[in-house]
Length: 308
Image 1: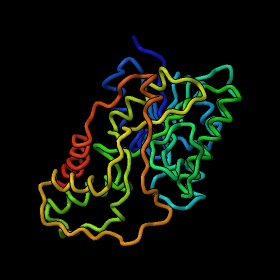
Image 2: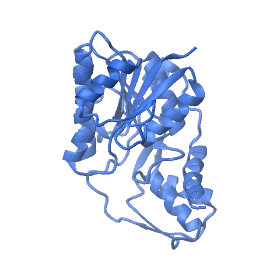
Image 3: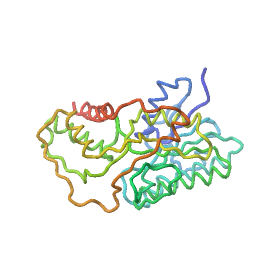
Image 4: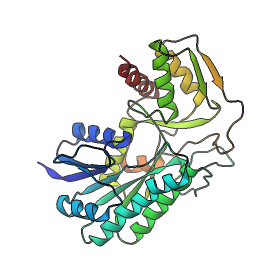
């Protein structure tokens, strides 16, 4: 039985393409349509700038998806204006169109970020009720995106906020630490780079979850999440970046690598960030199926295979 469509905004990005792959395997009854600024248009793919409200409105009227995953964004830029446009302006454009189309009311999943939390004075897992304390441009732009989503939810839209911690696994972009480690280790393995790896401080601890488990969680939130609520998507297991890098070096089978680590920690870097998964697990049960080791292998071999 073919169900009403699912719309992925940003389907060519890391999150969007991974979710599309996941849905094709585990939810084949849904037709997936996609929006992106850089794709070849086809029957189910649309090249649309989200800020073009008339084109967005026309698409939604014609396709009427039951679920919308708003996954476009920017993890590369440090310029606040660019981040604001990528996260806040696009969200406002999409949600303002949906307000105009009521009573049509699809469920919208907004991707939030652990970067919004910032730091805590005591080491404990972040819970969804913790306020935003971020000082980074990225974290501020994501916090504004979350607040905007809450405003539209209070105005009657069916919105669930998925607050993601750090993501690992196949395809993780090089703009993220694990992706960069994986790529550079693959270059060293293929003898295309000297065995030297420069990195920011490895003292920080982060909470990693595999991309496949992130996609599973997002879809279950679409199906079961409560309107207006925020849910951490995390492993609840803080791991130091030094441990991550050492595991990846071992996976690559490399031994003589010179690691050049920055002496001074960026004052905006959060020393330890990990989340509580209690709220999400109370809703969907155990959602972590991929071990950290398996996920790091997928991260490394993804880039190694690209260098054949």
